[in-house]
Length: 316
Ligand SMILES: [Zn+2]
Image 1 (cartoon, rainbow, N blue to C red):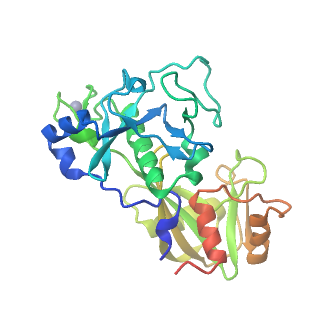
Image 2 (cartoon, protein in one colour; image 1 turned 90 degrees about the horizontal axis):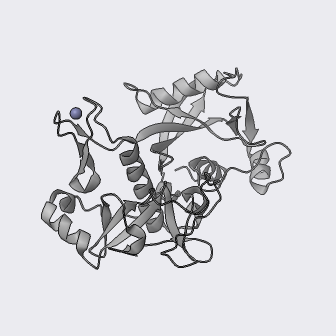
């Protein structure tokens, strides 16, 4: 698909600086270099600035807001200067309760127009570079938070190579950041596409069918299995279309075109509350917000991207 990488989080050709990860001395120099910058994240929320919180903030190394942060992770290089990410989840805002998804947190050491906010709320406003940096920082810091201990022997492991591996001093085990592949399918039968809704989704929300890939399974088989399990529809040909890193917390969405070989729907009620075939004219109503049952897909997610491109005949 020629437009694949225009999806949200589709990437910006960031230099991930693998040679710098491997060079401990250069890495230590970069950590104290005033030209380097640091992305601060608080409990998975990046720091944004600007009127619409549409700009990812790059703090100077040693900024007061980074006091007490864990070891910075090397995210990449911009214009030859290193960009790190630091987790400041230890900071306690004045309001102690768990923040809602659309809440913003203001840090006393930062200007008033700076705030930590859920990446989902800012992702469609970011440019490709800020989106890639934010997605990468959120995913890798989240992995470190949930993988402190060695999966082989249980001892505490330590970050190495700029944060792109955790090494266990006790058994020598090396653990690499996880990315969990998820297939998401545009299942088509002639001029109609299959949409479904999970039992706990907000009213009117429908999307493409999706599911985690299993060990030992290729992408095409995962597409056929998920569609058959969830909706009872048989799928024949499967073609890869586009991928989307989805750092909530560590998924990689693999968008596929799947040709249905049957249309009768048999729901798995644990997975789907409803599924239906939707034609092109009806889908136009969905995107226009005038459909009586189905809300427009959430902006930024690959489901809406694939559906829009299917409507526009741009899957080639
Ligand atoms: Zn170990």
